[in-house]
Image 1 (cartoon, rainbow, N blue to C red):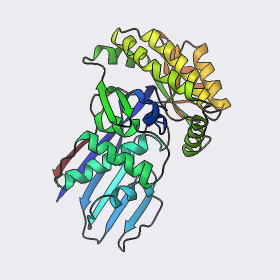
Image 2 (spheres, rainbow, N blue to C red):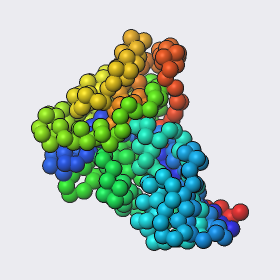
Image 3 (spheres, one colour):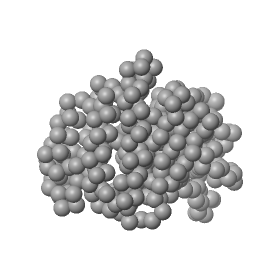
Image 4 (spheres, rainbow, N blue to C red):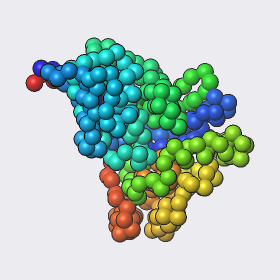
Amino acid sequence: MRIYKAKAPMRIGFFGGGTDVSPYAEEHGGKVLNCTIDKYVRCMLRPTNAPGITIRSLDLEEVSRNVTGRWEGRLALPQAVLDALPPAPGVEVTMFSDVPPGSGLGSSSALVVSMLKLIHAASGITIDPHTLAELAYRIERVDLGIPGGRQDQYAAAFGGMCVYHFSANGVIVEPVLTEQTALLELESCLLLGYIGSRRLLSGHLMEDQVRRLKEGDTLRYHDETKALVDEAVKLLRGLKIAEFGRLLHTAWEVKKAFSPYIAPTEVEEIYALARRHGAWGGKITGAGGGGFMVFCCPFDRRLELERVLTEAGVQIRHFSFTTQGVHAWSVET
């Protein structure tokens, strides 16, 4: 029996987040700088003797079965992926994530991209990264109506440190580093910490941000955060990591102006604590409200910062940057 596996990386968003969301991306042009990390959503597909399709989520401890054309259970996202593709009866799809769901690293989009790559591989079909990302976007944002942008799907599909340019005419992917030194130097000065579940559903956060944008309240802040992307790329290429970290602080101050729900009191307290113990800057890695935060600090302050954040209840997750996107493979068992 041949089984198929796939994994798609999650990402840390550094600059430009929010400009990949409609209607700003189509009307003004979005631009985002992010990089994938070695935290993945992993999937496996194997044939079974049972009829229909079974989905197993190991980390959510949920099982969903489709035998009669109707799904059971609460796994709406993987169900939507399977519903968007030709039927494949007699299979079981198992999945899990390296981090808690909804924590701001793009795990939902990584799940969709991983499943799509998995099923195409099992069907012997090659799919290019652009098509894969756009199909994942359609499933999440159109079929399921989950608010959000496009950067997560593209990061999971392409991987690496990239600038993504979003417009009404499509998406341009611009890799920004051709050698590892800058990535390694930046990585050596970053801490990633899980500060807890979001206080509000990300959908509420995104809906509030889109409403404020449409009403004209936050347009200039979107323009400001987009303008920081080019500056950040120059600093990275020049190995000016301290300046990059300070620019993260600037971006965080701009990001908070998108919506009052982005930075609850607990988030502000943790960020202030990190700054007092040497962090040049940092930010929430997703839409806001909680989840993961990234902090940029001098190399010789890392352990001190890790200690005080841990004492404050932050769960430090060590990571490395990755340079590749989603992978699929198969083995005979």
